[in-house]
Length: 289
Image (tube, rainbow, N blue to C red):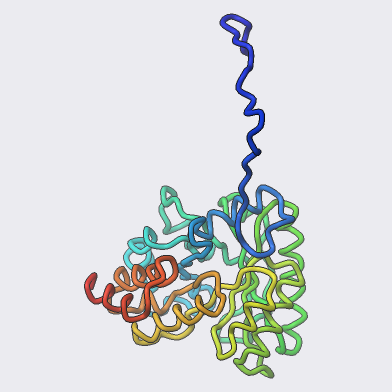
């Protein structure tokens, strides 16, 4: 404990100087606690307010899909170029080096695979997210999918409750229900439902009229990469989404199934954070390739 030896009277009070404060400049964060804001500031680059998330959680429903046969060989080399990693706890605990200093968006629901009926999921224990120091929890929400809609909304609500208790943001991941089309009307509905039920981030798909989806959602929206596209088309997808209001991308197959994944993720980063056009980013990809 400090004693009085060498004590100096306080004099530097900054009288007349305005108190400087800063906050995470993201939609929906004004009333959040410090823990939530701190975790979100790790996911979203403070300078651009955007994020490049690297998604490799596909195996929890698909198994060892192309590009994810050996996470240690295909994904670990890409992590240095991502702002955030989206994966399952099993891969994190078995394959991702603990020294990788990247925020983790943890896939926090599971229960079915592509061999059966999807989205009949349950949540993992929030304590596991705390133990692995997750910066966010990702939970599926399937609007327009019969019985699964109620199950997935209930999961999202429960995750949001737990996240609020422990200061961990929740990302609502919109799935396309059997009765819904992949259009702005559906994605605006699904994204808004996620946010209204407590999601702090929404992951959805890009579509025509996406500016309405982003504008009507009171929290940041990141887009999914979806199926593998030619590299220039994938970069155009990123560019259009950012221009239409997306706060980032969460890409998987369009990165790790690329001919040169390390070049591709850097090109995506250039679009999201450095405002490169698709052609400029594609030229960067070619140069790095």
